[in-house]
Image 1: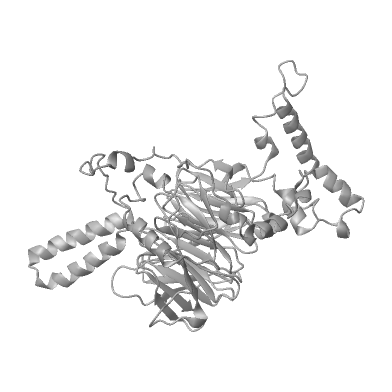
Image 2: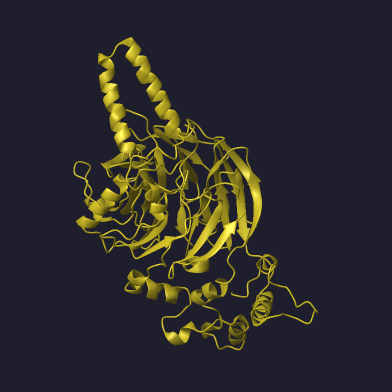
Amino acid sequence: MGSSNSRRRRMNRDSDRRDDGEETDEGGSDTDLATILSYLIRSGQVQILQSDNLHDEDDDDDDDDCMMPRNTCPVPNFPPDISGLEKSEFKQAMLVQSGQGSHAGEKRKMCIPDMLHKRETGMVKGQTFSHSQRCRLNSPFLPNTKTTVASYHNKAFCGIYSQDGNVFLSACQDQNIRVYDTTLGYFRQTNLIQARDIGWSILDIAFSPDGHHLIYSSWSDNVHLCNLQGDCETHHALNFCPNDGRFCVFSLAFSENSTEILGGANDGCLYIYDTERNDRILKIDAHEDDVNAVAFADESSQILFSGGDDGLCKVWDRRTLSEEQPVPVGILAGHSDGITYIDSKGDARYLISNSKDQCIKLWDVRAFSPSEGQEATRRAVSSQRWDYRWQRVPRRVIRQKCLKGDTSLMTYRGHCVLHTLIRCHFSPAFSTAQRYIYSGCANGTVVIYDTLTGKILSKLEGHNHCVRDVSWHPYDNTIMSTSWDGTLGKWEYKTDAAFSDSDTDSDDGTGPRTKRDRRRRHNRDNQRLCRRPKRFSLLD
């Protein structure tokens, strides 16, 4: 979670502890003060403000270390490079799944009334829309309007939907986990869980796939397991048995059968805990620095993904994994700074990673990076001289070109990763065919990308501080944003908001003034045709 030098700081602290026995009492008190100060800095309770001319002795700092304006998203000075995507199977599969078609004749402009007419007259096979056609019909109606469903007095860190979308969890710096019932589209708080053994804040939470339990982590040796169903509350501390020193699990994930917990920690290790045996069953030394992100590749729960502050994504196969000699199946290199989050597409082939180098990368696990790419990433990460937790983004980060040996399919730029481990996700398969990638942003927005073009389709503005977590409802067209301004935002599509600034008629009241206005009016009429009550769908 820390800067690229956090591993070196830990080594220095370990060295200091070894030397404590040889120091006098006066020296011991100085060490205690340094330890306390280190803790305050690492936890974010104390910030070091760097002087503008701190690096004046460097030769070309005036250009390289110039910072972007505060609360401004970095804008790349080059268009998205889609050459890697054009050569991959990902593009063709995505076009078919999202209803765009794989042939030129199928890419014509969608006309909703025409599609509805064909269905009603029996011209649609099976007299119902296919999944890809439903996703295509839904594509123009991305969420655009925010409703604040909850406000807290502290920073909100995590917010996720359950797999069926009927429950929403939020975790806040006030050490409370709130459980909301969302079955009817409304947010009704049904439970308040007081978290235990919290250092600074709850940093991650996860649902069990069966919906019976949740887990959460913080700066603690234990990950805590709580029940979500039943008359009495259960609260178990799961000891991951780390080595001596301060310990934190930054990222958590449940296996598909809800019996195993995967965690990535600040000691550079991956942990697997078996809830049935009530014991840690695996610990591997995975990264050279903090492990900020972990994920299971698919429902088999045999393939693991991990990402850390060393800038590398690693792929692990549990069937060939040994604690004594942990060797990843492959390594994905291309980021120039630490990784903050990983999300799997769920097919054991593709994943995305969010990074402090201000970009998201799309990966194919069948195309691992060569050794030269891994070394290029290590050099780029070790050369970073800024701290994302309280400094602004240096302009040189935005100008960073593709590293040698980068095997990613696509790079998405336009959001800002600062202050905390900001999350990104694929959009849901049911309603969007995973056509989009969406991410939180340090300037208080939710950014939605088109996976095939790399372009920003929408920026949802409405928060006053960093949006750390985002969660798209698995079936409804709703996005939840969890922000450090202490609020939960619910984003839905509303026609009035979409056309509030474009429904202007001509001054004499005779109608739309331009061809563009007439086109907008036509699109608006198409959307009104598709308006429906909550429980009725034209797409069924």
